[in-house]
Length: 510
Ligand code: 6LW
Image 1: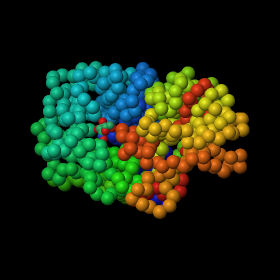
Image 2: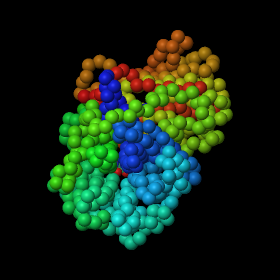
Image 3: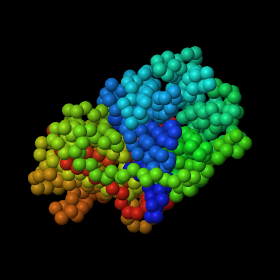
Image 4: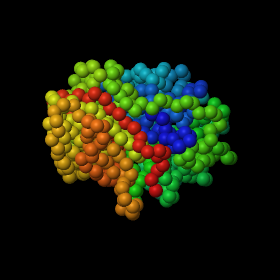
């Protein structure tokens, strides 16, 4: 789906809206590729392609087979797949990423076509932490740098590491969480880019340079080179960046940021999204330009951009790459092959409160939007949910005779309302909009309305719930909202699912 647009059609930041954190980017010729984290969802590591850094199309997921990724059923949300680095070297794409779950660790996959197939994982047990980066020096030696920030040599084709980790830099004095390192050879220097301050409001990006990939490194006097801490910028938590050079030699930075909405302290509900900013060089240091919601004029024409896929009729044998399922996607629980033109979900017991409920959804990408699905629950029960994690979600579900709205906020579970419905398939819907009424300091970021579609096509809301409880500031963690279909008992069939933004442009809330 394309980025957000102004009324005149110009695209805006974020360039990849919705829960797409920890972007890592590389360019091959005129083509850019970008990878993000995916945590508890399968397939893992979404991969995007662009020709202009602004319009990105998802072309696949690097970890899309059980032989590459098995997430434990009882794994909590926000564990799983963290912070990849994507690079192109010697005719191949290399992706190194951490699986922060039991039996996980650091792994490397390679591909000649980033749309896949990607190799089975090469395990790198000697890599001592998260946020691994790979870079090759002039002699062909490969260096792996991790959060902390430390480094060792690695053979990326076997995962074998050499020596002991060597501490490189820990960022500015007093700053917490030096992480997300990326190392580049640019001109005469090696540059070490890191995030620091933590992934919350204090987040920032700093850089140091040296004459060898393993230092010593001299910090940039202007550090942090990017941070929005303490500002009233609509985009907050900016950090975890990667640099890329365009074919015209201009430089750009991709990084994560959030769009908090509502009153104080501000709640962000879409997770950490991918943003773009221009970079110039002064005295051999990078200077990050303004993080414009209305993107800066690019030095090259925009590509037409991807066609927005708003509706899925489940007519393909495989699900499109933007669909993500909780923990795994085994054919016995999630398939389009059982009833052609329908998505069939078969429950493995439990409710939305279970970490491995059968759930397949797509990221909420717009601050205001609606989603609908036609459900046949004659053989089970299930529905449509807005999910942040197993302890924070709203759902509307049916067993074929009744519809009920369920809510889970922390330890509190509730059936909000129940209504009898005529037998037969039914359209369930959610509408996410700005809060009604005057703005106050305590106003939440949005409201989530859950309901059914009547035979005349109108939406009958059964409950309107405060969106703040499905925000990262309430729930914690690293993900964002995912809107999707789920099964809690038996077998449930979904004929179609549609998702569309509501309203005109989607500026960040005040
Ligand atoms: C990631 C770290 C971070 O490993 O959050 O914002 C962690 N940065 O670099 C999970 O996304």
